[in-house]
Structures are given as structure tokens and as C-alpha cells.
Image (tube, rainbow, N blue to C red; front, side, top):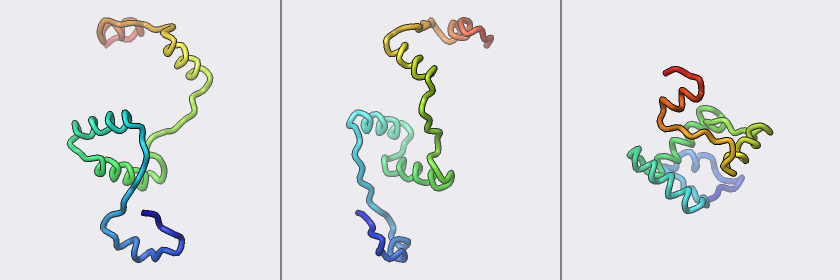
Amino acid sequence: MGYGIGRNMWEVKNMKTATIRARSEPRLKADAERVFRKLGISSSEAINLFYSQVRLSKGLPFPVKIPNAVTRETFEKTDRGEDLIECQDIDDMFRKLGMNR
């Protein structure tokens, strides 16, 4: 359902629900819905949560950034399987990062 500029705002404010139609990649949709089920919420509830957060923050509720050159290069290397550090477990990871747990 779309709203034209001439739509009476009183009518819009007094509607109980509005319909949202969006296209999504099937796998993305299925993966997201699996997460929603684990959280015990429906897709509609997740969308309403997202819209509420957009309204509260007056923007997207998470940062959206274009990766810098170093980040892009790192992504490309890991996609090729280069410069990867394999860890046996979380303790091994912290050890290899030079961090104490």
C-alpha cells in the first residue's frame, strides 16, 4: 500500500496497521527468520522493532560505513584464504593475540 502526497494524514495516523512489501534474497530471509524464531519473535515484530529504533535514533540504529582501503584489503585476503591465523580454542586465540584472559 502506498500513500500519495494528497493522502489525509488523519487517516494515516488513525490506521491500526500498514502493510510493508519488500524484496529480499531467499537465503537472507530464511537465515533472519531462523534468528527471529530463536528470539521468539515474528518477522513483523522484528520489522516493528527496527522501525522503532530508526525512529528513536532518527537514523539507522547501527553504523553503516564504507570500508577503508586496509579493511577492504584484509577482506580480500581472507576471502582468498591468506593471512589467516587458526586457533584451537578461545584461549589459543587470546594467546596468539598477545592478550591474557
